Length: 372
Image (tube, rainbow, N blue to C red; front, side, top):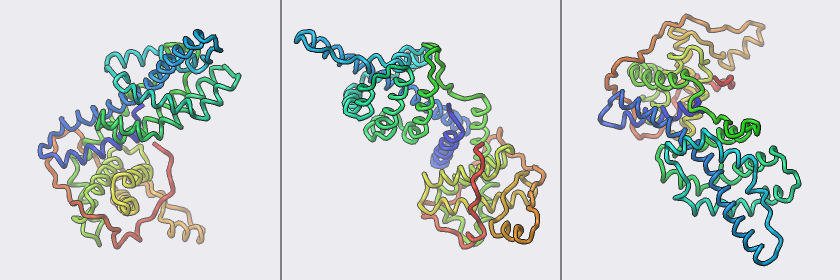
């Protein structure tokens, strides 16, 4: 479940914190990174448990209404929603129940929020259409929960506030975790019953190792990577870069040099998006230009064996002249340190705002590449 997008986000946060803390202990920082990632998996299970909590509250409401109907001789309420086949299967899921039992995660202490969400569900058009529809298939039951989650949980400021109060680790996780919850709902199979598998914490050990290696390379090779940044900002005072820009570019360079299988343009695109989220309004274009220049330098000097698309104007000239495009392939010789104790590098930059460098016209926005 923990994918590389989430790993990159966590490493940006933890690298920033690492340099802010006076006591720079690499082993402790790495443990904090892995703990932070494990908290994201807690959130995944906690949000699945919310569906169960809503179902149980709705079941309680149904029992109260049904007893009242019996006393008054009225028509009993519909039990369609409380008997939703997907929600019932999730309630009985072995993996979820075991995780909740071990972690002691429950919505019982937040029953008022659950009740408010139940009210919102009952008032929604999605719920009313579902209750009026004669379709009682498993697919319909699963689909109504997918729609309800997207409409009332995915973009719910109340739940964002509640989660933030429960764990500081969850502040930036929910948007990514929501996609995994929706994926889980979609892949549930009635034939699997209580044995339906949820998403694992890591797809494989390779992703966990990716997190560890990227974080260590970022810290251990900080001086080298910052030297590349300083050279790339020839016409701009490197000390005036926004602190977060330096952190983001440092991690991006570490990824380009540590993982030869990830295309350079994929790395650049990923960290430009993170600059949009975590740095100044002008940072994304600046980070894009800087990383583009650094990647081309690393390729041209033989430090990295990867390809980059040619600058747009040069590519257009080649096409106009009928020339073939250069591959830019060179020998990979850089071997970043990932297992040594780090020195304490001085990260350049303060809280100063980021401004585009004077040589930004040399950097070009490249086309999107396939995700790694």
